[in-house]
Amino acid sequence: MSKKLSLLALSICFVIQGSAHAFVITDGKKVTPTTDNDKATPDKLVKNNNDDLDESRSDESESDASDLENTDNQDSQDAKDNDEKPERPICSPDALAVGIQHFSYDEIFAEDLVWSGYGGKNEENKLIHKDVKEPLQTLVKAAAKDKVALYPSSIFRSVRLQDTIIKRKIRQKQPPKTIYHTSSPAGYSEHHTGYAVDFAPIDAKFAKGKGYKWLMEHAHEYGWEQTFTKEYSEKSGVSEESWHWRYVGDEHGQTIFAPRECQATEVETDEADTPDETIEDNKEKQNNKETPSKQ
Image (cartoon, rainbow, N blue to C red; front, side, top):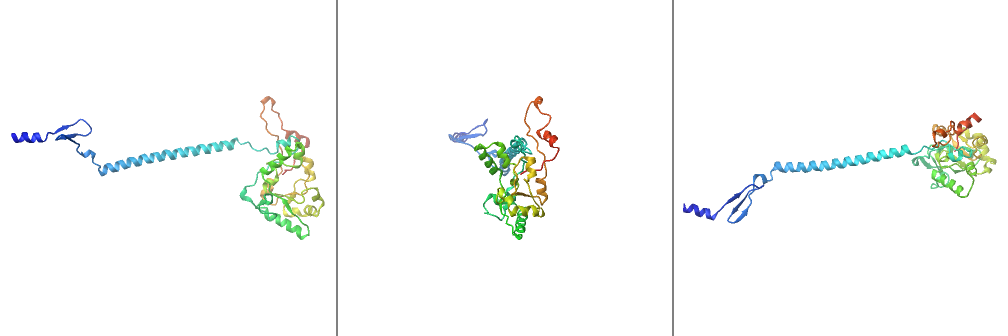
């Protein structure tokens, strides 16, 4: 009995439970035992790693979904912007307002532009559509065989440069009819296509030279034609240009330079104020004939 009491005095153990972990007080010291629940078993490690992996995948999935949503939203916005972008009228409204017809042309893609072989390689106006380089050189060489010199002075012209030209004339206080009689508005020049060429000299002197005479006799044999003839000028109000020629020797040239009819710019008005006929409808009734396409 005495021995049992002694042992009890040396080691009084109180096991307190009711918390997450039990602890034992031995000789006045608190000792927290390790339980089976606290051991990091392989199964538990796998479960924890899987939980972490699932959480990581969930984050990536949410991130991917967010990126996809942002991309879809951007694509939708881009499509909306393209839908809302107004289509360029067939004929320039500004020129048409003063009785002059200038037809619209899209600017050639940069990857389709090549050096023509004339002038400097870094000169923008010496670039040409890749499909027209050989036909132009063939034309020039054919003229040379007949001892006639043809020099391509201006070929490609960007919409940006054309816009600069028009704005300069406006700053010079030139009347609109004067401007559009000799210059195309930006977006309405045959030079945008890379399929049109101005031969030197770019003035009335060209019509009096051997080059013009030779072109009038032989250009059609090589797929070239003069755009701004005397007849065209009378119909369109654009000045006659003996030096300006375009290539119609392939399907693309025939397509972009196919005859078109002008239409007036659509203006938003009240239904009661909307005219029943466009300007072109009235003009067609008066002339009853088709107008050829312009640069």
